[in-house]
Amino acid sequence: MKIGVVTFPGSLDDGDARRAVRLAGGTDVALWHADADLHGVDAVVLPGGFSYGDYLRCGAIARFAPVMQSIVLAARAGLPVLGICNGFQILCEAHLLPGALVRNAHLHFRTRDQRLRLLSTKSAWTSEFVEDQELVVPVKNGEGRYVADEQTLDLLEAEGRVVARYLGGNPNGSMRDIAAIRNEAGNVVGMMPHPEHAVEQLTGPSTDGLGFFASVLAGAGVGS
Image (cartoon, rainbow, N blue to C red; front, side, top):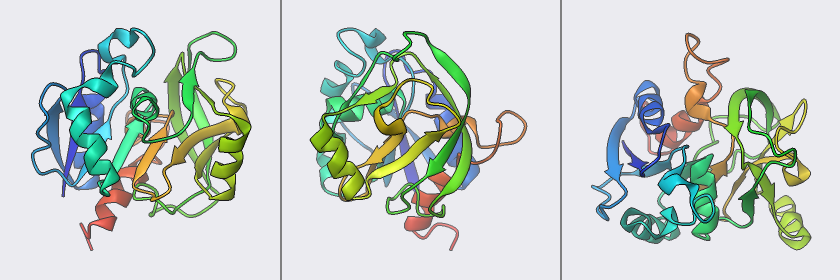
């Protein structure tokens, strides 16, 4: 299975995401922001970083990149897409996910190993977990506070589209402790924590993040 990882100007974690794909057993494919061709990938990761310098708003310029025009169309047709940190911001700006990511409530950049509770296994990126599973995945953000109107939050809750919540303290003030959400179909997931930094014991606080990449591979029958 080929998983594309997009590089925007200012991306920082594209290399880490590609390594995570390989460790999970997939084939990583580098996708360039200015190239609309997705090169036949079976899934896409939008990595963390500061695309286009975070000018205007985080992800506001990246949503107009040629590669994103193709990703939006493909995602609406069912292509699995995972947005991590800046990638989550881009998914919201592109209206593939509801809500927005804004400045942390305490106005400080926050980086730490973060406990999470996995709430939804009904997505292409979480099927290998079990509901209510606790994970430890790093966070590192200055504009990671998820916000939405109450009607949208209620809808996400009612439809089981809150994928993960923060445990042991909310690092950025996200409404209802939301760390990750999915779209209605379950193929698009946005998360503020960084699973690509928790894929091997040598460098991460855990290997819990590997499950996100293993899930999308399992859905395609890789390794089965």
